[in-house]
Length: 72
Image (cartoon, rainbow, N blue to C red; front, side):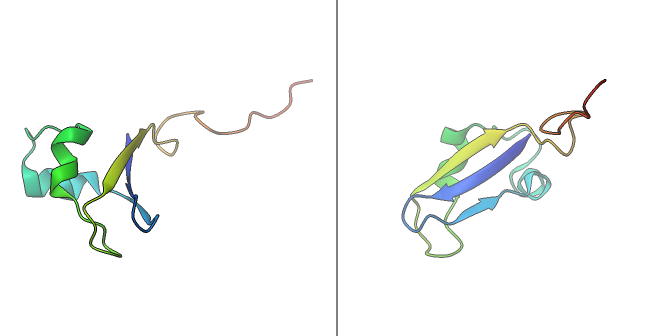
């Protein structure tokens, strides 16, 4: 899973380091948006107006988001 934080104030986006979050918050910490959002602040403008975007990580999933060669 890839989680991207997006600032509604300045439009800055950044992928979250999930391993660093796990180390900081603990392995049992919930990872839903309503749990994480109050703990986040934009690194560019310091706003707390941050939303999260959850998406499969295509680098880790076989075939996700990759073009398939033409079959003849």
